Amino acid sequence: MISFEVYATQWIDDRVIKRTTEGLYRSLLKNHIMPTFGSRQLADIKDADVRRWRKERLNAAGQSTVAKAYQLLKAIMNTALADELIRRNPCQIKGASVADTPERPVVPLAKVLEVADAVPERFRALVLLGTFTSLRWGELAGLRRTNLDLEAGVVRVVGTLVELNGGKLFDDTPKSRAGRRVVAIPSEIVPDLRTHLARYAEPGEWGHVFIGPKGGLLRRSAFRRIWNKVQADVGLPDLHFHDLRHAGNTLAAATGASLRELMTRMGHSSTRAALIYQHATQERDQAIAQALGKALKTEQKKRSGTQRARKIKKTK
Image (cartoon, rainbow, N blue to C red; front, side):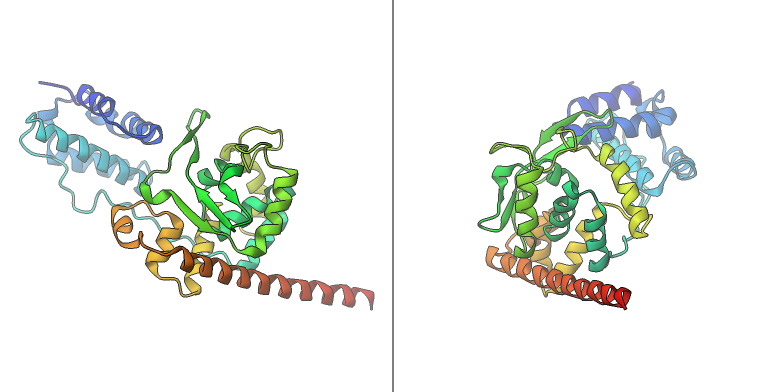
């Protein structure tokens, strides 16, 4: 006989997984699974126990978190089944592993430009690159000068900067093979990127493109204070930085890009996406970047015209 706590702890120890994934698993175990099942014997956990546990968790935590906890519990019990420690996996709730994540609203291009204007100047390029190349926060924070080729108009995504719950930062590889990619940059934002490299980026070939005001690595936790002010300034209190990536992908879709091209550009990590979307051509990606740039240019001209009209009105 073996307790769930002993088996689950060993289950994680035996896994070859990324540190972020390990941290998530241990957190889910500690906060959501162990309090109920830790002292129980594996063979004594029944279907009804799991159903009651899930209902109790749904009353105490978000649906997405409970779905992840259930998925982990099911995976552990599946291994116990394979090890012949139990006769049947008690996790049999249909759909319980699927997180019901509501779709984020699309941020209009005009608002994206407002955000770019509202952030401190050293983060303007961060907003523009995050939007128009669909890079994730960690990919932006971990981006090195050597992987930003403004002559060719591309950014090479080969790594990510990870921040653990305790605040520790470390460089890591993308979560999947699809995450390693080359993304075309709209030429319209290249001047902003050149200015940023000259004024704010870490020096040296391997210097980070985006760093904090004091020269340290860019932390999401520290940037959150800046972002809170931006949310208020642009009138979008629920705006997430990740919404910029969503906005860029939506704009790319409007250019006529196929799903395969879009998912390749975004570095989608699911197995299905990797199989279906991995063959997008670099030539088509360049066309997507050019179309994104045209949309940006049109919006900039529109804003410029509006600002001139306001100035004329004030002088009358």
